Length: 304
Image 1 (spheres, rainbow, N blue to C red):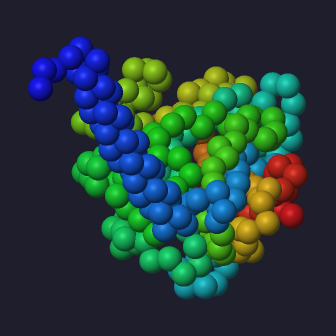
Image 2: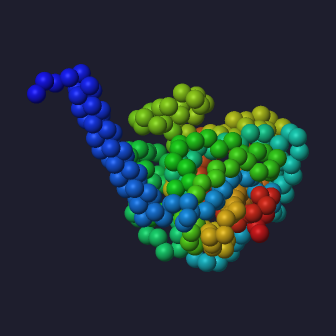
Image 3: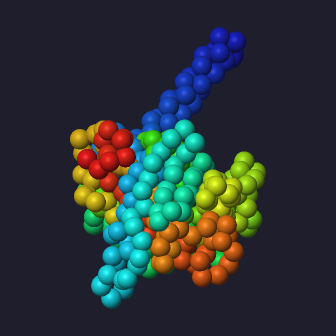
């Protein structure tokens, strides 16, 4: 039988139709697999709720609680009054025993901010990278930690904390419903051996091998304080966060009034804390202990 042009056209049409049908079926199967995966990991829209996390400077001092604690459980003898904190257009002023510390800029580098559930066992709970002198773990190793925790932000990213004590920039993400007991985060020293850090340094050239930067005056003398404290922090929520109704917010506060507490009274000079030695080591320990976290639905920096 002789093949006519109309027969060729019909054959091509049937071939194209079969190809399109197979392609559509494949795409549908792929989308179905993605949907199942999203549902199985607890982050689908039906099982996830919006949670916001933000950073603020504490507007009241926690110094008494810090000074009243010790390894032996007894209160150490530490002279001096509780620091007072005031805010103004110039920044945050911390006063203790005649020493006056004005903070006009406060910046931290943070990485791997996560919510830890009450029942989760995070994969690296015993692997504390708290040494200030090194950062041996690679980016991929760090980013695989806390697999059972809800990720808020990976980073590294710069937290430019408002010195007025106001609410800072918040990150809002969907997390699975459940009960969360703490915030996990890295106070992160920026290095030159990590690809993510290199990109961060291009955007933030002031952060070379440091994690903290403060600018201000101490008893009227200008200073810039930098530190390479490098620590994984587990910050307990004062009361567990029960996610399941939506609209939940958590605030992490940083108490700068405790960073420079001097055991003999008053405040250390931030310039003195820039120099390696006992003062610098004490300030680093104080930094690690200066974080609190709590539910804060109205984002006013006060516990609900």
